[in-house]
Length: 493
Image 1 (cartoon, one colour):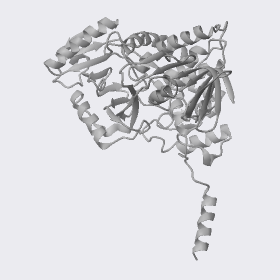
Image 2: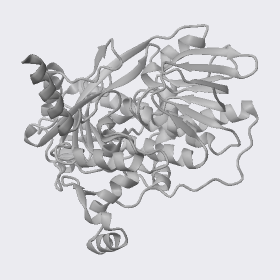
Image 3: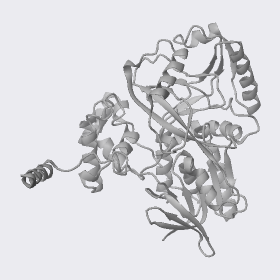
Image 4: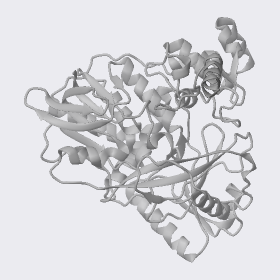
């Protein structure tokens, strides 16, 4: 049995943010995740928008945490050396009803405390984004909106927490939670590992209601809402410089077109309620819907540069708001669940409040000093010629390009594996370094990445996976395959 003072279930953006905050106190902290890595749920597959807060209903937890959290992002990303860009956003309308909706969103945003909101005319909108549909009638300008890489932020939060003592355990799906007079809580997992803690915090994303229902006197219902996306290749001359939304609906903020912090263009998502929270497949119907809706925003949209499609699952609670705080009637249990959009934007504020609640109830002392997290080195792609020359001179592995599409070097891949919470899968390397994120989607570099993972970790090459489980890249050696084939031929003859 593995014991800690505090145990966090879930290592998405909320769980890692909470872990980092609690690492500032004198307490042992453990994080469990059923996935094979950090950010394997909604955090790895969302729009990456730091919403300003104009959409959330005033008085809700979503509104409260959205505006507070968004205001924390610039300094947080600077501290963790994570790319962040305040590109602004436009919510566009095409008719009189849309114009009324935008006026309501303006009032709502002002009530929530969002700065800089402004209604724009057709002429003003098209002067800002000339690639927009010329039939646009009006727009709400949201200058405080920003973009970030959500999984890169989660990795950095986890690394910061880890260098300050937090332990992370993966492939640990919780199946039972018991109260114990001495230990407090006993957490059992499908893998057979058992953990104990004085306090636990449920940050388990799509599994949030299931964990809640194991211990609480009242049940919750989670609605799993899938959204599908197109990702277009990098371009130095993107047709849009701001995030462009259409008017929102009860199912979400609608199909958007947005630049990413790495120079791609992201299009999506749709919104479809599904039964299986793990079903992140894409469908012809869903992608067709996204394309048709996006073409209303951008008539010139072409999929010629589309490099991949993906989907993510939003954890939508039936009560349609976040649940943050202690679990009623269950001392020692806390939760941050139903953290759908604007969950990414809200995560820093949720983590701040939740850690203060836990620390106060447990009477924890803050550490006098913390180990500073220095972030990751500047990527080889972003270095200038002189910086590249020095990097190769100091470490010749910088001179070996593994991923041609994104110019990722051997040195960077080895660094990704050896981070405080390092990559153990090909996708883990991809999201930490962008090796495999480019036009060929890993077709060239995946075998080389797998070899480096095996060398750095001691995992047999045949056991290295794409994204955990049975997703192994290799079946066996050629010699073993040929030997098996020969034996089969002999047996048949």
